[in-house]
Structures are given as C-alpha cells and as structure tokens.
Length: 107
Image (cartoon, rainbow, N blue to C red):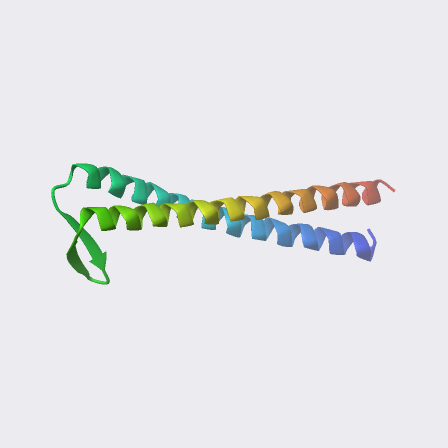
C-alpha cells in the first residue's frame, strides 16, 4: 500500500469521526425538538405558564412563551437541516475516497 492510499484511509477515518460527531449533535437537537413540541402541547391545555430562567421559574404569558417555543423549534430545525447537509457532503466524500482506495488496492 502506498503513502497516498494510507493518507486517503486516514481521511476516511477522520470523516467517520466527523460523521459520529454530527450524529451526536443531531440526536441532541432532536431531543430538544421533542422537548419543545411537548412543551407546546402542554401549553395548549395549561391555565398558567412558567418559564425557567436559570434556576428560577417565572410566571410568563402563554402567547409569549408559545412564540419563544415556536422560534426555538425553527432554529432547531434549521440546525438539523444544516447538519444533514454536512452529513450528506461527508458521505459523498467518504464514498469517493473508498472507491479510490479500493481501486488502488486492487492494482
């Protein structure tokens, strides 16, 4: 195996690590999205609403809290889409490198 092939294998391993990091970030964001959706559902039937600020729970207006949660959901969705785009680009790079390495190893 030549040096160039070894470098490509190293890049593939780095891509795999990046993919793992993206997966963890995406899972955390999806968890936050579920939490926001759950909070919005609870808010629909709640008579009073509270917002947690630091270690303090403060009485809040339902419509303001709902607006905040909707905004948070939008931001999370955008972040998830950005991560998915990066994941897709990395997958393409990894597949290209894998094909190159396999063809070089056959030679």
